[in-house]
Image (cartoon, rainbow, N blue to C red):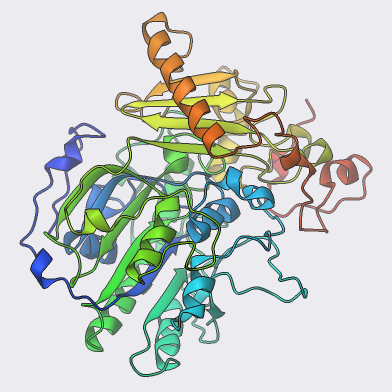
Length: 524
């Protein structure tokens, strides 16, 4: 099995020393039959918060099994660290700034963008999902009918939640219902969209139910105060990741009992980083760098490998299409930007891309005129470069309406409580306005605290990264780079209840947005 790496080993390179296990397949063993696909996606979990990466305060035996019997990816990134745009990139194989309205959170999903799930349904696959598919937003066809972007929904089987805010959907039992519902020998594609570890959490549930202790946390990010309440919040987050993993384990066992695990590609990841300040909805390491493991006993050569290559979420759709014997054109999809990962499965290529692009537009409500906070970034080598386009705006949402691009939490409250104290930096790092450019050495500073943008020693490297990023975004037709970035703010927010929330709030006619605490508001 994959062993946990010592915490002293380098953040980016040390885990590559993990031992490989014996091969479960060789290229000669690879079966020609297209595999089934089980895509398991946690809702808000950061790298490296799975056991296979050496994080001991999260117990994830199912993820660890997938990694040990398949591939463990060290540098997997979402282009956009928010639910709807991240999932849109997965489904289409295109970066979020290439998806028109779907670049935003709570959008109307454009009819022109077909998803891999819709394409494989048309190819005769049995396609379905449980819990959270593509969301939040509205996706309809020209007739105003709901589109099944991730297939048919399976949510009927319920359970008694072990804690408050844990979903009552029995994910694994609904997967079983999905399998029972298909025709004999029909290949399947299933999206397991856990609702955990999304907020809210039952405070203290990690300690109460799982007997976790605050001193188990080996690292509190430097942009939060290291307090017991923050550590308890992190343990509650870990507890919810473990709920996701338990259902994954049941799904693997079910496939094994039915004799279907051998020819099923299992992909396990998360949509964006943890729901904490300066993470989810931002563009730093913990925001966009995500856990990823894959197994396919019949099709992955030399199982137990770690993969050092950069991987982007836009790589999933072309990979799934390729395994079905299709490309985007044959599937009736818009051209994809991502890469087919099958050479990595076959171990015929180790590096498919030398950088990843990241960014964001409008995430949540609460700014005047429903404006967003546009950013673009590039991760290459050990460096993360970020360009902030509207530095007069607040990056985590407007203070007047409660910084609504940051979920309410004990950690958020602790950081906000420091805004007028000698520990002001904790508020500033998560909520204050930012400079036009940021540069971080993520091998030395994974928390992205020390902005090197003004350091002369990095001037040449930063200029090269900025040029490389701009050229790549121009080639992808990014409106923000081509001078038409305002179009992203002009797209309607699909949640009519909260559209124009800032103006309604100013007029005293808005209800609570639903994910803030009383202490989150700031009239500065």
